[in-house]
Length: 430
Image (cartoon, rainbow, N blue to C red):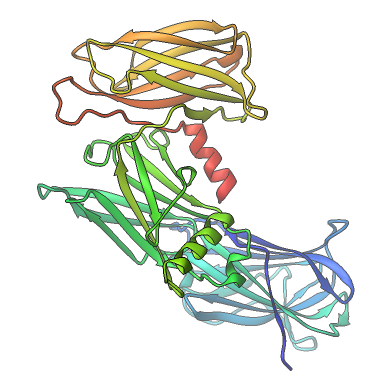
């Protein structure tokens, strides 16, 4: 029998749901999940398969599925599973051996009972993309008249570390956290001050039609001033990315800068069209390039954790130097509407080296305001700008800047998204 293959709507970090598929005349949702969704020292992974009614959300009982799981093009296992209550739970042990559990020879399927289904496999140690192929053999106790194979892809985030040389031969640690697939190559060029890395990517419409998001994090020390610059330009396969696709986070990890690449489905389609126009027809990889940029675009924007308040921040002059007055200009906005929030109380705080060097409390009667401050000659280096107790609540956000001596050969300002912005990225795109 030739079984047609239907793609899932999209893969995600640890979970993927195929929406509103038709099996024996009923619309269902089919969810595949792997947990934990990060590569860790845990020896065990859990696979959950869940079948629910697309209308009611209730589990669909009494079905048998043929489940095949692939990683890096290799088959990990293919077995039949009985979903008595609409779910199947499979334990993956980090070892080699034979599948164990309760197998019912009458229905030719593994049963999820008090005896857990255990499958030994070392394939989950490396993370990346895991490809599921699922075919219903029976559905609600009835044979499936026109069986189809449904495909889904689930990501286990991976961490990659590299030691590269700077322009004078010193070792610099870099890291990549990939929420898509494993990184196959990484390079830092100290002459051009450019980072490149790549990973496998399927540019077919079948894959791109998923509502996927490709999210990659680049980590390096804040002390590495060659890369600690105002902003960056990002490229994918040589095509310039939109500004919104490359964001900076200086707060999630104390001593590291994180640069996020976030490519939406629309970004991926644009890249495919741009590559075709450039004569690149069938690339097999997705190559990221991170280049330094001296352009600063105001305002810098961050949100509070609950996404209620957006803070816009600018400063003048753009280059912050000791002994010269700097005017910090800010606006509090409704994050949903963009409208200024009037009569907003706040604490404006400057921090250096973990210590507070300046604090001012105020009330933005028209939704915005400004603070003047002159840094002393001893107040150079990395500086945090915090807004706390916004509107008399516990809402807060933070930015980062660099104060440099007037005589410094490298005069720049470093922008940063707040910790909250980084958390929002994780919530929205993974």
